[in-house]
Image (cartoon, rainbow over all chains, first blue to last red):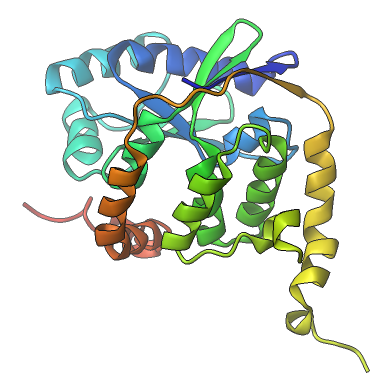
Length: 192
Length: 77
């Protein structure tokens, strides 16, 4: 498994994410995706939500996880039946709120991209916290496909921050399938 | 003659908007690579499956960003 250590003091958000995923990982495999990954690695930009992909769960395990999240102070607007139905049956995002200003978007893995993300997640150690993040080989083309300005900036930042671990061949093959050009990343190989 | 923003070349876009993010990426925090070993994931097999399903996957990614992404939640059984 790929593993990184970040040399910085965990922020308030990092601590909050660490507290949340410590519970999630007791029950299922997860990977943090989207904007928070860039923030964790040093990009300075605001965010209010942290997107997390998880593996499917049996109903009894999901109920235990739901109960534990509530017991430590996280807030979930839906009752358990709705939580389970939305997340695992309809496969839509479910929000889990913190008492601070952030919330988590939980999403169950449902396609091949999610499978790649979970099976190739990267361990990140920051102080006493251990997290798992999405691999850049899929996160970067995914962000470029989304195409908003913040997504493109995130993709560029991630590419250059994690360049020494990125498998360029896999990145290019995935981008090719998504019909995404990597030129915007400023890859010198492409000679833009 | 002034050029409109959308007439800028990719190189101009890159210089104007993306270069600061390369600079930021080189700043702190320092990232130490503890391991860069991939697991036993069969990338070739996975990619061949992706080739078959890519249209549906991309449609789903797009749908997730559209206002209609709540429609399933409010469906009546």
